[in-house]
Amino acid sequence: MPGKPKLHYANGRGKMESIRWLLAAAGVEFEEQFIETKEDLEKLRSDGLLLFQQVPMVEIDGMKMVQTRAILSYLAAKYNLYGKDLKERALIDMYVEGTTDLMGIIMYLPFQPPEAKEKNLALITDKATTRYFPVYEKVLKDHGQDYLVGNHFTWADVHLLEAILMAEECKSDILSKFPLLQAFKGRISNIPTIKKFLQPGSQRKPPPDEKYIAQVKQTFNV
Amino acid sequence: MSGKVKLHYFNGRGRMETIRWLLAGAGVEFEEYFFETREELIKLQQSGVLLFQQVPLVEIDGMKMVQTRAILNYIAAKHNLYGKDLKERVLIDMYVEATMDLNDLIMRHPMQPPEGREKNLALIVDKATNRYFPAYEKVLKDHGQDYLVGNQFSRADVQVLETILMMEEMKPDILAKFPLLQGFKARISNIPTIKKFLQPGSQRKSKIEEKMVPQVMKIFYG
Image (cartoon, rainbow over all chains, first blue to last red; front, side):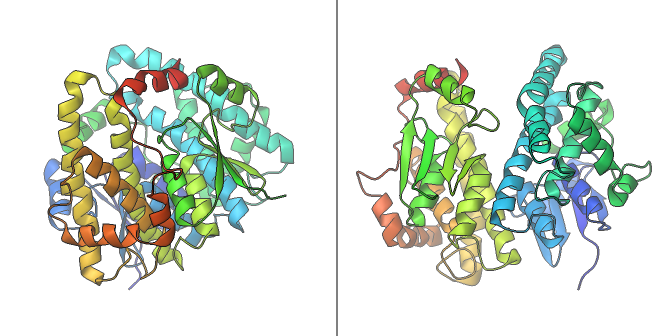
């Protein structure tokens, strides 16, 4: 019996944020149940709702889906954001894995010891500007199209925008050497579903603050 | 112009091993190019064939594919090892993502400093026996079929077998409490393409010798 997808996670970005982005981009409304204490997590586990005792978990289409990439791939395919054939899918997968790696480093930054923060920030900036962004800039340059893959809007575009915005939170001028990515950012941000998600009051989560970090450490033993 | 599939990696398991397993399971022949020094890896990076300056790299169907999961997804879909529909695909994805989490722990284990080795081994064994293997045992129990998903051979079966065998190398009786996984292991090992891959002389790589670890680290990290 179809209802809205229901997301189970902490009340913050983490690994669930990319899923929120993709649902929002696809124009799919969703509910959220936040895990705020150890007990909340334990209950999900003891109720047998988490296949590998982990979150994210998304209740959708009669399934209790876990594993971030499994969920994202399912949503992308279901909402026609995964390209038109195997070759487009391969490109999307390669690009998304790149942005996943970059966002992964950024995600862990607040959980690093304070003395390592400056060094890690430099690492993020270095990786973003020498390994990842040049690739996407070149992709856009080579085909001259508005979207990364197949001349149409896909998951790869959503994921890259998310990564760009996260990187800009680390260093506001991080796109200074990437004019095509700047234009890309403007374009994708203006897609109606994305624009809505970027407005205050949406289900998009803010960067982690001290309180959130403490809560996550407590609840998840991070 | 299609030729043989070509793998670029060092002469060991690492992240390429799961790709070797899947190609072998699909009955696809492949050639391998090994780099043995840091200089050779740097040369590969400078040649521009590595999208994100990283390996694995697999040349297949005119593409230079990088990112392990992108490569695995492509091979699985191309060779009909990815289920018959979206629902089967998401089950497969959930199961293989978990094997990749466990594989990552196994892969990083030899890199632990000696004093942390025993504790790390205990952690991996705990995850395998309390988190991952019970899930797969239950899947097999609930449907009573020979294969994990959709009553047919898929990449999920290949990847779970790979992980089982690597765990057995760490603790030979790891399947003691999982009779259905024992049956599964025997069954999947007997599939002709898998059986062939398990024989001496195949392209399956051995577990890394401890004394080789510093050398391999040097290739990747300098």
